[in-house]
Image (cartoon, rainbow, N blue to C red; front, top):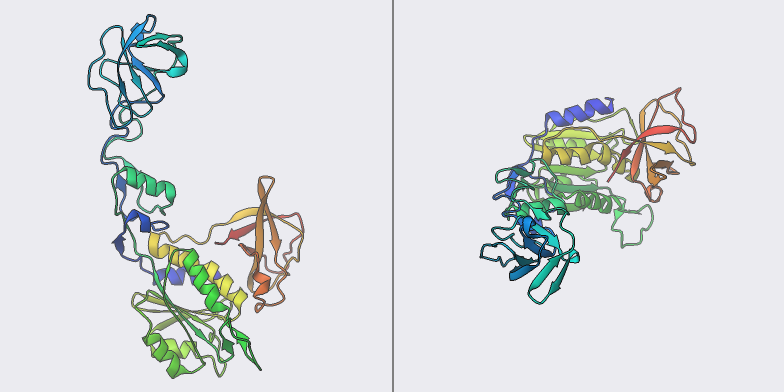
Length: 394
């Protein structure tokens, strides 16, 4: 059995970031920008009014001024202000030539075409050309995951189809003679397949592409045919069959498909029989069949791998600090233990509640899980109220 950190480095050693695609802004949410986005013009592109009011020369503010025109966003005043003149101006409009300040409308009294300034010692209320960004400045750095603010910045820079990382294509094979679909009532020794739903939801939530998902019995030839029929993929996930029992076909399946196995057992609880293999640029994992083990190894290895394939940043999962709340504190074990927990923000910090899992097959026990608690090995122990490190999970 190898430790968790060695397994992660072994995975990175065989992983290669995906290529790039250009996507319309409407389809780029959650993608990782590969090419830095630069401003195509100064922002603002001209001196613009920051308030509704009147554009004028500050030296004229102490006398009555004649209104000679108006400017609004999208419609500039094209003349030049002379002495004793002003222009009615709305927020975002270009400041007319000859004006050096905008007096907000609350600080003037207007009578017909005449304006008297009541206060003329305030700010200029002008957004200067280029004060936000200059042409050529980076507005969104490469490597940024695109959220709504980033997409808005790209739109403002005139980038309608940014170059982003291609989302990893994932295929999922579920094995098990005992499995039936969720909408079927099990009979005899059958159980419902929950791992298909779990993996599909995890992949979708992280913005990856599930190109194919299929379920097969514990039959090597049938499984080999099922994988061959899957669409092209970067990562193959196999649920179940990771161990060495008579019906555990996953490792022989990968070898038959031409994959090279790199490890097949971890010093980990839950999730010991995790298998990792590669075939050129394609990667494959065999996940232990129990749903809790599925969730744990996905968070520890597969989620950060899928992020690496888009970003090229190979950091292990981040850790935060929180206070251990009431709940069943998992006992130490000789294996490195990562226990599913619920982290909530209270009074400016995190409270961490270990979930009361009956076993690694307790799918309902995962309800509410959004964090992993690393448990110290013996003779370490935890106490309620203690501050501990945890791994936040999507």
